[in-house]
Length: 494
Ligand code: FAD
Ligand code: SF4
Ligand code: SF4
Image (tube, helix red, strand yellow):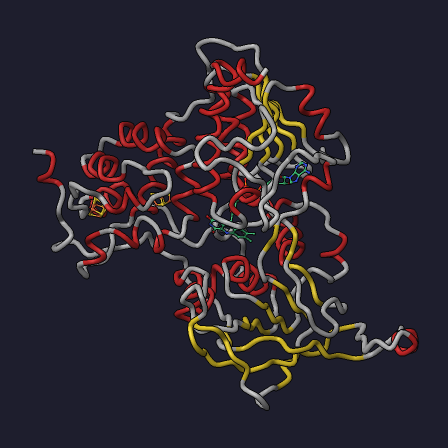
């Protein structure tokens, strides 16, 4: 019986693929986890108890059929495991690497709940699709029939690319526009190589192009081409532009020299990883080498910044977060990785002010009655304690008076989260409705916006979120666009 191979969680302990030791991995931008060997993947998959109501599946945003592909892996039927896995996930090898599994599938595995340690779902998902690529089981879109209708997708991040893949497989003509020189969105230029090596993303981009998706890169919609022109060229349009406006600090010298935005810092580092020339890195502005670095924030972006700074050869790296470890938004697994690599977390602390050497334009600053610092020398750190819970139930940080101190820093990286750009204003589209948070208003299942034939997915709708949610949105939007282009909804609207 198939289940004889399963239910091994009592006799077989949980094991992750081997992690490269901290000292070695801190020297480069390669992924830190090794691949499972076939025998280890099968062994770990066999720990699954094949739940009748699998909570892992219900807590996966894509509702991946996890128990089935675990059983097939345990039985050594990897090609079938791959077929089941890719039926619900456009980029399983990417999710396997970077989903915060401890908050999603693995965090809800019943074996984890019963104290035996979760089934290592993410690592097995990655293993299945990496093997599928090696074995040549992954193929580009080859639609049985071409369709004349075309779809313009603005944004080549996971949301846009998941939709592009699904629409192309349905036979539609798909063009993806992106302002960057490479496709992938934050997979390419946000998330560092030590979490997701760039070859993995480029491999997917190449597969999409091989399947007939047309990419128009270095094309900033709103500048190089208008939104209306894109609507005029295509039968339907999908907006998948992500969120890039950085939340800022309201304090003295918030933009002094040496204070940089996380997105600029990570983009530069990723470009260097590709071998590109980056003047702001070459002149030291976006390079942590030899500097005392302070990163402000407690989310995944902050975790990526601290670990990047370590790899660039920073003298020291400290992360300031205003709540404690238990209340931080970033993944605990990433905090542990960062600590192993030498990052120091200063919990319950926040920047009060940036201080430094007043140089150059001090006189001008005085004239304008501004206490301006040209180059950062230190962060004045305020100590906090956790007070009463706010409306969201989280304890609010409260200032401890008189406990401030100066933390020397030559580079400060602001990783405080992202907000949406004002698309209707940028693109001159009054009819495109947005929410009070500035995100594009779209139906939750069809992803239709207020404009006929225009859809929106991913972070620009949800606010800063996760890759797996963008993929889900993109796949759902592709189905809705197909309905629109082939069904009665469009005829009714025309
Ligand atoms: P994006 O990936 O942001 O892609 C949007 C694309 O649109 C970009 O390529 C951009 O160039 C393009 N674009 C924008 N405006 C225009 C325009 N006017 N014209 C043309 N093109 C345009 N999520 C996880 O699940 N796991 C992680 O480990 C993780 N780590 C992260 C680390 C960092 C540093 C950051 C910033 C985010 C991280 N996330 C992570 C979140 C995740 O990357 C996003 O939720 C996801 O990429 C959103 O996908 P998207 O397709 O909506 O947008
Ligand atoms: Fe888990 Fe993410 Fe894979 Fe779903 S897509 S099974 S949440 S790793
Ligand atoms: Fe297997 Fe855990 Fe999912 Fe149950 S919850 S099916 S044990 S992976």
